[in-house]
Image (cartoon, rainbow over all chains, first blue to last red; front, top):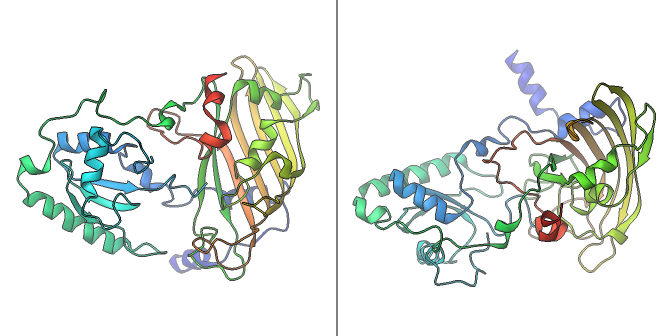
Length: 76
Length: 299
């Protein structure tokens, strides 16, 4: 069972020829979030350095800073 | 947030951010770091590129936490807490908020394999894209045909049609698209059934886009299918399930982002955003140029 699952996970996704109601679910699955895609959202992120430092100070904990020029989703 | 470009250099938040990065060779620079709340940089912890090295990052974080614990408390925390009213920087994005009643869609997208791809390229299927696609009530009412009867249909125009393209929801990369680049676009909504207050619609669309600007010479050819349910009593969409699929071609490969074939097939899925509570700080990535402050100020 484990071997089968691994093989499935490693198999390249077939590229459908076009979008139809028959291929809808297959394409939707490819575009959908998978596994740990959004595990980063489980952290208590603050969107501002000010808020993170104040919260860290109150809890006496170091702060993890994820600094990004623009937007972490891309260079739009 | 653009800390480097913010004009108020004397503000507390700007000063402590500058302090944190004062010993960083590149100054305030992108990356993942660990710092004390008092403004002391402990470590830069992102490791591995383009494939992140999670084990090394964890080791570096643990090392930074150990350094933190060795510092006296008064050196690692803020001894006098700042005032959020005066000491917190304000940014233009703070003014961009979701208008009441907005149809808030979560868009996720992922490309398919293409010749010559490596994980250097953001288009690699290993990477997904996530965004928000918002329609105000004045925009999303277009999706409902005027005649509320089965088989009634309406052709979607304007932002409800163009936003799918102009905001890059159909491709993995981000390009500058203008309305005149849309060579052909159609999106039709047809009522498939009505049950009580619930109106079920089916969406069908096709898109052909070709840019010819200084910044973008790419193209896209694809289609959209979807199903959604509108509650005519509460005047809101209660379900949304749509997929876009098409061929995205970059006009120019960016040396710091792309490698391999300029074309790939891309899948995009839109559904009602499940994270609509206050913790969801994500706004559409194209909030500034795609929507703008006037958009959210005028329902």
